[in-house]
Image 1 (cartoon, rainbow, N blue to C red):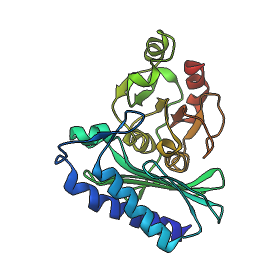
Image 2 (cartoon, rainbow, N blue to C red):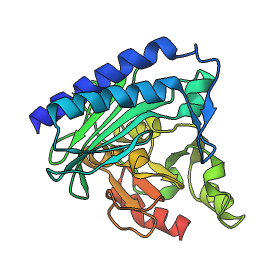
Image 3 (cartoon, rainbow, N blue to C red):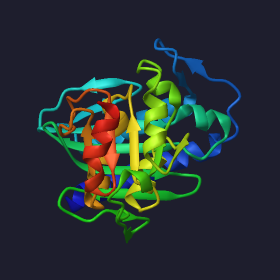
Image 4 (tube, rainbow, N blue to C red):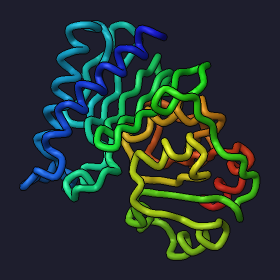
Length: 253
């Protein structure tokens, strides 16, 4: 896995070098078919990552947000979200990040979150301890929901739920912060947050987080408590202290 870790770090370095000149310099963006925004930086980053992978790992699959799926011939698939959090990126907020995951079959075995402005980087590898900027990090001990520090990208993720969902969640925990995007998962792995609940995600939005959080001592599951993988649906829970999982599943039940 050291070869793959080194490659993932190099891909993130390339992504950051492309993104930084565009930050707070974007004047316009486009809307994709699903009405989500995209910028020239999103496409440039993913294209550069794809070019490197095509040259160095031509038999591996690629699943990217902007340019779709290339089928794997090796059993390995690289999953890329060039800028997770395009809305905050356009807004000049440094809560976006580049997400890179490597899946063996359905399972994410490597994950990387990179914030190129603040220069935060979390790396997780299956069976190894997660690092933040090269230093080992771990989740916070928090066995009860009432003490849990929570986060999610937007309340709009839950507009399809019953009206009492957000009130019920807020009532059971310490607090909820909004707008963390992918960085919330890194902060959970570093022990600053305890619970993230999100919906309406694609695999490239969450696969990188799995090895990071689990390598820091936490858990990620879907809303039914099942393990997540390349073929999973769009609702996820991340907990730092595994004792929180049962209560978190109760919130979304």
